[in-house]
Length: 182
Image 1: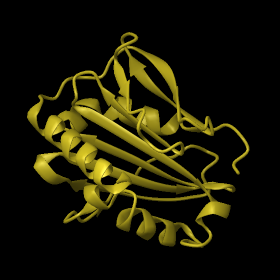
Image 2: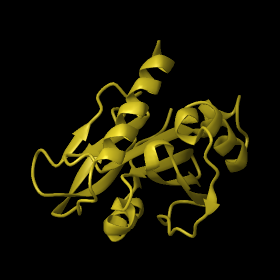
Image 3: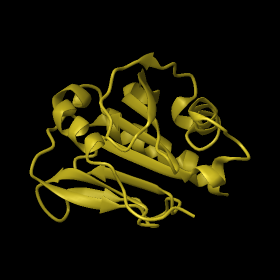
Image 4: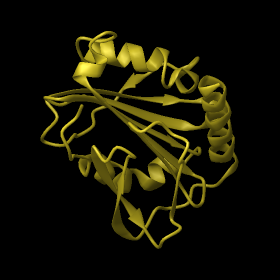
């Protein structure tokens, strides 16, 4: 059931992203947390309704979409202890996430290397851009800290990535590991 819900949500996001123009993100930084409050990220916000949080996401995922439905950001934090059965290093984690959690996003997509700056607490990272279903542009950043693996997934309507690149890269750099991870 969770898989079906995930497929439907991703398809809706891709459709919404592909059908909208490339609005520009603006406003003062606002802090957003995943349900577990294990990490935070700052996103430009012009008010209380600037971003819509998908409350149906797992506790280790923050899934937010801007009010104009042109940018969707999904961040997953998975502790290394929880990841151990499926991944022992960043490459294994990336393969696992692309085949399971975000399989629908990466279905038929191939990553092109991208050079992305990451926060100082990250000890290893890899990133790539891609074109997703319904002409949505994407950027995936896979990161490793001492305690966790992170996926920072950005999906935008065609043209919205370039229009918002500075704000999106600032959001990546604002990622903070907050609490002790189980």
